[in-house]
Image: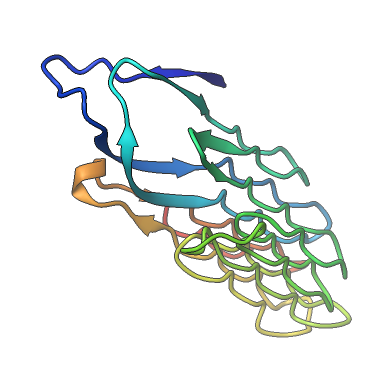
Amino acid sequence: MSGVLNLLLAGAAAAPLNVEYLVVAGGAGGKFNYGGGGGAGGYRTGTFTSLSKSTNYSLTVGGGGGEGTAGSTSNFSSITSAGGGSGSTYATTGVAGGSGGGGGGGASTGGAGNTPNTSPSQGNSGGNGGGAPDGGAGGGGGSGSVGGNSPGAAATDPGGNGGSGTTATSSLGGGIYAGGGGGGAKNAAGGSGGSS
């Protein structure tokens, strides 16, 4: 969803305004065939000190991705959060994104988080698969921590848990945002999603 935000603040001074923001992108989808968990969308927060009253600012809210698909980008004015990287299928590296997708079952590596790079970081990497031949898949990265690795290479080893989300400040309404998805497994439980 795209649009324009206009700061209509009755009685506000004409001088530049301080506006606290929270921009979260769409999370990604996980993958089939005991695939990795989807990475959370990028999470960025801070304060603008130079916005003006009655001025239009661009605003986009990114949607979540379907199976094996990255999330979409969100933005507010000059701040952009990248969509989460999708989880991958068996023995394949997770996709990079705001937070990276989990590696698929078997021997695999999670996708890189904080891609593209921002400071402070907008997210974390996905977890790794448990190893050949049949380890579970890695969890997707979250804004608060990396995705969990599957603990072993057997078909009975579970998928890794999704990385945790981040609690917003009370001035932004609180709540926990941008947890990663849990990884799948062959003959065991999938990982739990990260708090979100």
